[in-house]
Length: 266
Image (cartoon, rainbow, N blue to C red; front, side):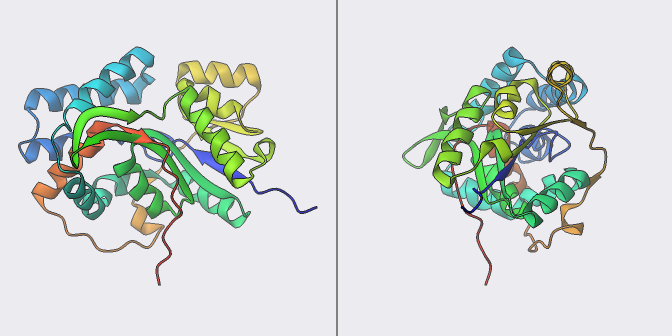
């Protein structure tokens, strides 16, 4: 009998990317006049809290509500097009070299690469494509009349990540006992418990404790690099307005379990 397929599941923020993808666009967002200086400072503070010690459930919930409401009223097609054109200008220097190497190793071993993130699908999917991910599980904004309402249609967070992984595993036939998972956050313990090979990456305090109690390996990623130095990327067309609108989606932090095969260029 042929062996069942396997996958490596990666959280995004502080696992693949050195910052929160949800907050990375606050300054360009302000530059376009779309948020106030006060909102930028609040985003910067949230980024600091997140980077230093991680954010607990209540902090993440407050941040999610604040960020998602900023997106209300924006045209969906415009936002997606602009994000696709400009995203790598913000994300490119923030990708961990160690994470890119891990992704390459898993692909060479024949495993699917799946990014599982509570950030918005409009941001996570292009990042996944840049990295050569096979699937993306991410949050999705609520949409009415082709505009974002500021609400959330699906939130890929905590237990929901684990449920989405089980659903994808059933669909693709993965042997979860032989799969891998990587995350920095204690909120992703349910996701890590789904696989036979869990790893804590740059773990927050609570995840470090959980990893020690369960005997999970701990990895430390320290070398952010330009993604273009590791992965061929198309040229971008940056504009101030485009960067600002890209921030709308990034700070929205809203997702859904959207499974998409990577596009193959001719």
